Image (tube, one colour):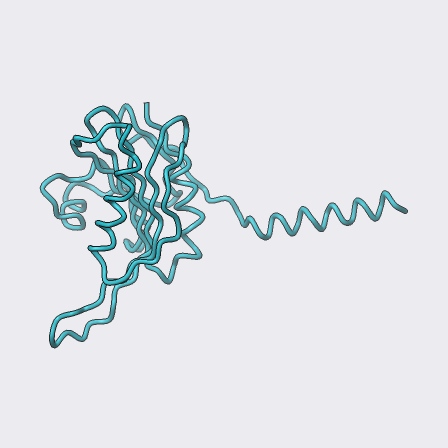
Length: 187
C-alpha cells in the first residue's frame, strides 16, 4: 500500500514537473562559420543576403540571420571589432544596458548578468522593449519587442547573438530564446 502511494505521488510529481518545465524547444545544431555554432529552432530559415540587407540595413551585415516562417521572429549573429578584452565583461554589461535603455522609450529587464556557457563568458541582457511614437503629431502604436542578447569577446572581435520576437509572443518564444543562448558554442 505504501509503495503504491509513493509510486502515485512520484508520478504526480513527474507530471507536474513536466507541465511546469513545458516541452523542450526543438533546435537544430547549425554552424554559422568554422568557429561558431548554435541551436536554431526547427522551421527557421536562413535569410539570403538580400533579405538580410532589407531587414538589417547596416554598414556591416550580420554573419547570419534566421527567421521564423512569419518573418516576425529573428535570430541573428553579428561580429565587429572591439577594443575590449575578456577582462571587461562587467564594463560591457553596464555599457550595453545603458545603450539599450537609450535606444527605447521603455525597457523592462528580465535578466542582466554575466554567464559562463560552454566554457565561455557572455554578457546576457534579456528584456522587453517599447518604442513609442514621440513625434509631435505622432499617433502610431508603440512597438513592443521581447529580446534576448548575448555578447562574447573573442580576441579583438565582439560577437553578438540576438533573438527578437513580438512582445505578445514572449511566452511562446522565451524558452526557445533561452535554449538557443545556452546552445552557443565558440571555438
